[in-house]
Figure 1 (spheres, rainbow, N blue to C red):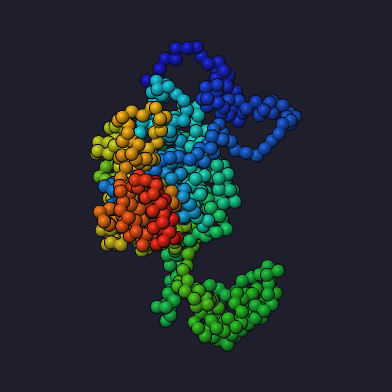
Figure 2: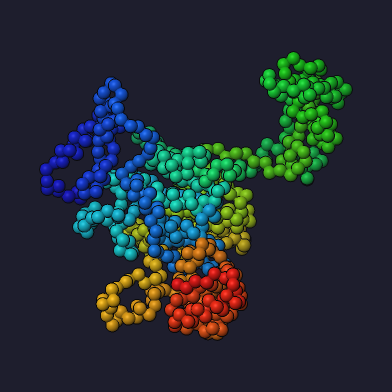
Length: 636
Ligand SMILES: C[S@@+](CC[C@H](N)C(=O)[O-])C[C@H]1O[C@@H](n2cnc3c(N)ncnc32)[C@H](O)[C@@H]1O
């Protein structure tokens, strides 16, 4: 129910609304004295609208919105958070190369900057479309608790205030732009030079997204706006029915990227000959073409002897044509083609013609070839549609756990355009929702024996009470996403009998730093705070938390093999066979330090508090200098 306003009408607002009715192009967004974004009038433009002469003033080409500078700063602002492994929610922790991160994707993207810098080949995102209530972001604006409640705020598990961007919110487009801009900036850093990003969006923010992408990725990296007919649409009403969504495609570096093309289904190769087993079926192409002026070649205008002994010239005559016809192949190549079964003569209505055979599996020089056709920028709804996305989830869960999931077939199709041949590609989706992208990656790997890995990020957004997911015991979207990967993984493994497909995933949760970040002035300590001083590490952190915190800082991937073993009573962690060896036990004996050093790991890390004083620390340094001088040693 709307609340009584209990005050007089806002006349300025009514005036702006009136101008908006007359000159909608002159309405923009601005901040009021409380820092709130509100509708405002672009007076320069309004003056120009009311003046026949050109109004003086500096013009620059730029795309901006309220909060843009802050959004740029947001991307660069460092954070002290970390990723904590969640073993009991993970599947095949030791062997999997897939990663599922629970938390805000801005923080996740920041945390991945070292480890995944220029390592991601393919990003697919399906951000909230800003349709009125789908967009949740952390509240950076100062608002009192009661004001906040009034505005329908939400609180996440860490007590952070979240806010839904609704239609009535004056900050509508600006907020969405400020949300997406820093995320795309950070995502771009993660892309390999031959990487590509696909972004789903409907018409609400398409133009803003395109301008932001042009700025972040460079307009020369724009590839296409792929139109997906997501639904057949309804036949009721008189309004225009929108049945499409957009998928914007940008490369990191256009010159470095090649699309894979769609494997030809062989439909046009229907003829067979004695070479079929090695060359596949074939189609016939006429060997001559009419050339426009500059393209005519005298050397390609010659006669070929037909099976009845007559001569055939390009264009079909028994003599040279005067209309600029050529054969496509040289005389020598035609001779080679006749001898090797690449040329066919055919008689039609008493007239002989010459064709070259285009085989499905080899080119016209006899080399093996993969025949493809380019993808179009149109995906019709009979190939994949929204209803399939919902049916797919219903099939896995037995109910509808998530609204409007993308069909995994759509994501698989996008994967095929860009990573069909790159079977080791890292695939990232940082608005992962119900985890359609994970299913698409696993499915494609099962079909073609690939080893592509996924990284998914999803905010643990609360599920609405009373929804089907809620009724079935799911309280946030991460729970749905993880359950979907488990269910889809099991289905794919059983259907394809593809035991080799990696259907596991390591779960990480974004949390505060592993380090104690409470600093007190000397006189502020009380007796019961002394335990805090013993260690600079938070008491609830496990050694695995510390290990993964170090990995992030050292730029190691989160999905590498990990083992641990006991050495002289201490636990020694070994990440990716010596990329990093760590021991976080208290009072580590010299024998353990020596054992670690003897293995000459690339990096070694210990806990500062593991050594009771600086001489012990110096001792560690000396041991490594002697036994493993190339190892980089650090303490946390
Ligand atoms: C349109 S849905 C994606 C649906 C997904 N493609 C699928 O097929 O299920 C967008 C998702 O992004 C999530 N999201 C929104 N803001 C986020 C943020 N800041 N960090 C992480 N996830 C976020 C939402 O909770 C929602 O699940």
